[in-house]
Length: 68
Image (cartoon, rainbow, N blue to C red; front, side, top):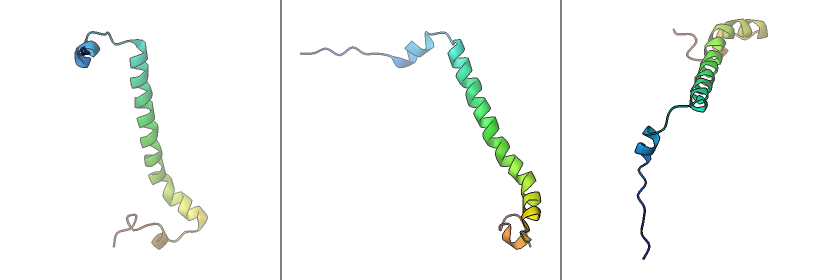
């Protein structure tokens, strides 16, 4: 018969110190979240200028951009 050894993952994680790699991963994730949100916000400011330059009319800009 084989015996199974129990491994407690939460206690293993809690017994380790937070190192530079973990902090680097957190910073990298925060940077990715910032850049992902920045492009979404930037297009909301640039869309009217782009539409004007391309000669688009307001009715083709989308349903949410103009409320009646």
